[in-house]
Image (cartoon, one colour):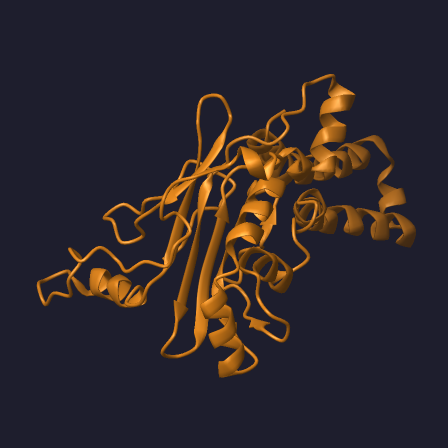
Length: 274
């Protein structure tokens, strides 16, 4: 049973099954029994459960965040100093990463404890090795097996071909250009046919965002404002991001349990947001 099938059964099968059991019990038992307080309490709980159970399954089945929180995720990837403040997701409906979305998706801002702390971090650019280590750990490959193309982890200016314009319909493009007005890192994560990972320089301003097959990481610091805006999107769920309830259901039914795989866009919320 794949992720989408399990989600549909959880969201629709569970409530209909509960309501069906209540109706069946009602038809098979004397009418007088249903006027007793204990039975009415049980029946009411079952009907309410038709709403609550799918929600509970969605929460339990997600297996929790792959990371403990934004600060752990971002500090590990970007080698941030102590005392930084990592803001919450702009989209409150998103979690860092769970088995329903089969992905890790984070985008928000980081505030440093002081301008000096930012300057030291910016000058050191010590995020290269920690970022590669995190990607390797998430996808379950040795760090030395990830090839890094020239410039993939360098702070570089945007393509000079992107210019601000007053032409009709250019507001969104201008806004995105202004987001990347200073040097930034954009590393696309790709996987080849043999399963090897590679990092390459990507282009977040392209008409269709240049995202790798496995996701991307953007480090967009502002030396002028001494802050950092970052995006981490790991598109593929590894073996440790498979949900325990679906695993148990597949085992009981004798079905193979898919360990990870491509993100399921039908379950929602896993693609990068602009």
